[in-house]
Image (tube, rainbow, N blue to C red; front, side, top):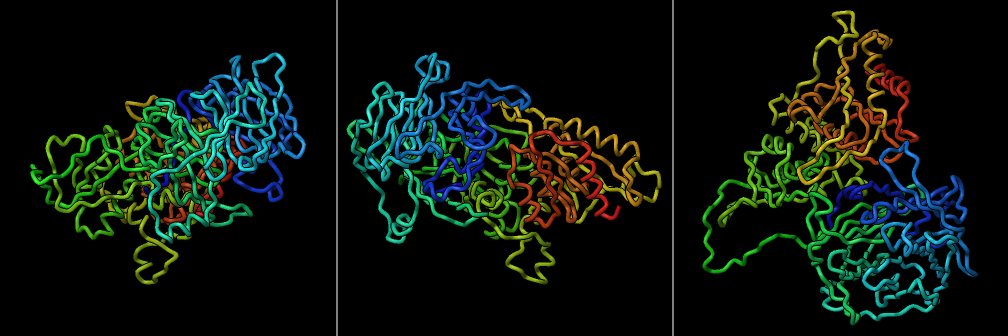
Length: 624
């Protein structure tokens, strides 16, 4: 089993569900080590139940022991519907400040039979029926300390709330209709455990282990997941942990827990909320038999075993009907219609061809079953030829095949959760002054993309004179504003981009007026503001716009991934909304050696005047 890091899809089918984490959602921390709790908690809820939205505390500052439902909406200005729950009651020798997780039994809190279960760190488990006229909490004090740090889940199959015991040897079930502190216990017997070496056992013994139950929505099967995490670093007083191993067991009614690497045609999502197990068709672009991990300090994807729709055994009478003599990269794509994740696939293929010493650009065979997207234009430009294994109608053999790692395994993705202390530098400078803390790999990759579209790698910016420049001798800087639009990602998905900058049009028009009116106050250079509507541009035109830009502005989004193709001395100006404070483009700029500026917003609306002021400062730093 291999651990594959990934950027998971937005967790929703119909309505978006925002995912936040906080120290209130403990990961095995003792209460004495907890920092001062923040003013709210966002708990990710099951997207199979889209009307639930999120569960949050009701006070802006300080936890007041009151939970409420809040319906989420992509329009952040909308007034969300709220259903308040009664104040929590803390049992003797218990606490209600640290929530392990929250689970809801039905698709809507307004259903008469809906039950909310809150598991607190420690012995308290609380139930509430929010649809009742006078709802109240039913509080249970669990006697067995093995369940004190366990997360709770709801089993539709058994109509009970269930918890795995710490260690994974017991499962406790609580019937919300019976107010019993003693659960129904089931003893688990682990079977068919894989053999492990002593170093591997020593590693696992040093890990923090957590157990999670999940029930398939399609088959009703129950799986036990054992997650092994290890501390990798401490960041600003918080421990950052990484999953070293994930084991999955299929449970039966007799208590047999059989180790498995096959969960059928399903995908499991494991987070601080209740885990859920759904068909991959719910998330276009995903393959079955994988587990997504969404944690406070980690986004990961565990591919339990490589999935293929058909696998024939090679026998003595096997005959290759086609031999491919040229070196060929075998590539498996996942989020194939997303630019960021596709760039990680391009980068993986590029590095694979470099480290294996291939003299020319190799051919590529896609091993997945995905359909064609507009991004195939770049695959075709980057490599000698593209073929699809799904279209092979006869046995095909390769003289020289290279298995390209998944894009999730590249530094472009792993760097989001692991510290990669490396800065960009030109290959020429590194050749003269070797430095293990610097790299030219990402810059070379960008040059490869520019070259693939016929652009000289040493080409810099356009010399066109902008409208704001009155002097023919005034130097020009292209300022590219990368825009985001609603789009149809691929034929199987009618998705809509969630707004990262809700007044993007206003910001762009303000910048356009500032430039066109000649009121920039810049005397030594002019600005040519480029409207980066990439959704309406060919990939070649997008790369041209990137390489011609002195400054690239944009809200956090996949379109900014194009900065891998930016030329040296390009400045990146990212507008970061409160919902998307992720380091993707700051890190890419760092690994390319580009200057990076960020404007962090309090919400998803930017002040156009502040954007103009920041751009003015950047232009002055460029000598304007």
